[in-house]
Length: 386
Image (cartoon, rainbow, N blue to C red; front, side):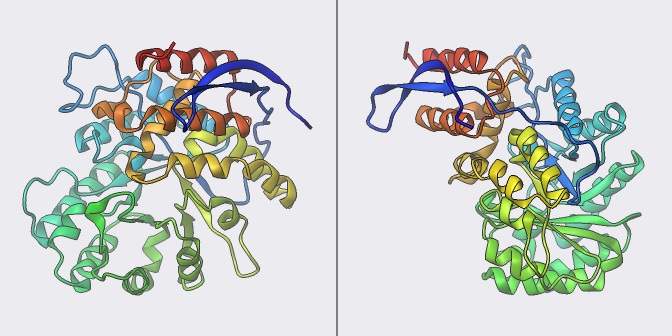
């Protein structure tokens, strides 16, 4: 059905001029009536406190109420919460102390949600030995388990810097997995998300790295719920998915190709742990409900227009995708400002925001077009455009 144009706004175009754009009626999405047939976690962002006196480049100032309210929003659409992850600006403004407090508050305040939380080594300072890396992982895992939380074992910058060979990765992961209380999700975050993680698992080729990782998974399969890989390459994910030990899930972290990876093929499918679900929760939820009913055409009809939006939000430099995620939350009224932890709202240019606005509208995801236009005009005004 054709969507009617209901709002007009002038947006920056690639030619450097302001061109008129017609915003259309948003799509209507229904909340799920039963669980999905795919496990689906949304990696959630944090809402900054714009009235804090903390220096934004030095300390994280968080609006805890708005941050937790957004997690309730995601949970209401049927998603588990992947907490204190890259999407929450872990390592780009959010430190371990605030991450642990975020995990504690989410577990206490969103009790009906399935929550898995990031454990890493990001409190380490300076050069670290392999023993230091192991101790750091142990400390964070123990802190999360003490709260009753599930663990996502995040990739470690300190391990990437200190490891001399794949054996060092095996030593660290074997040690940590041998101690955890219940199966964890391992996160292999690619260098496109974090340049400091290049060569993770000790090789320079992703397929060779994959073999190292698969060896770790095979030895520790009883302690691994699944692995999330974020390499933005569907062929690599599928290749690894087909080699996983029995009972170990593949959680797609591919924000470029998530729709077809979740749908799967004759040999299997990926579950999901995605940052883009933060921004497209209503559409993704409705699509997953259709997939649960084996209505694959409807699944693809809903998700197809969200893929260009996701690819735009996650375009290189991919690590700045958090800016687009928070911008979407602001456009849709989930927070009252477009200020980010670490001042990261400045990480993208105005044309990027204008194109994001168009693509969100094309996907039917501007829930209140009048509000979205008003807020887009505020951003344009800040940039001297009236």
